[in-house]
Length: 270
Image 1: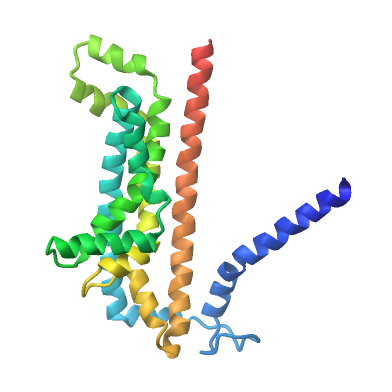
Image 2: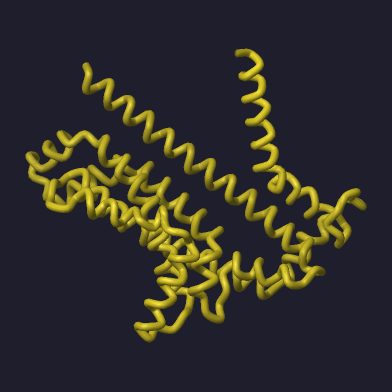
């Protein structure tokens, strides 16, 4: 029994090393002053990070990615909030089927989703630009936002809404002043996770972008030039740090939702 437990732990350690080794190697090589990505390291340098300050194409791609990430995360959060509100508050025909249909992009390969969206947009005669990428990313992020907001709404005390209506507030006022503040941790979590997904997403952006590439598409294009590889790895290090910070914030607000749910259940039991 002990031997099997040690074997299992060893497998977990090996798997974690295999999974996260590239993430650890990325900052190591980005601070190496050699253009050759190999050991041994030749010396410590920040020159590759400094080069990023003078890449105008990179700055444009970053602006495009920020625009797409902010827009798509907001749109997806709004849609996810509406879906979660409807599914948790009301009962209607085809409710489960509707929610399941909204969650379909979670299981579809992104390459298939990108090709389908490209075909539809071409058939509609729309030009590819940043807003077509926003539409694609919104479709991709909405299932994540829906799951987060469903969790927030399902554990909401409905009696608070009923009390608010009894005191004379309208449904709109109750939703804006009572419900939204109570599910605000879920809203923030949805915005953060949607922003991270959109910022890192490549496949849909590759198919739907026009002459204005997003940051992942720009990074992919740089791999054709070996001399650009060190600065690209420096950019990847920055994105890795930003993603870790945003994911940590998402986890913080997710834990706040769990604590609130636990506290609500304890009050109900009392």
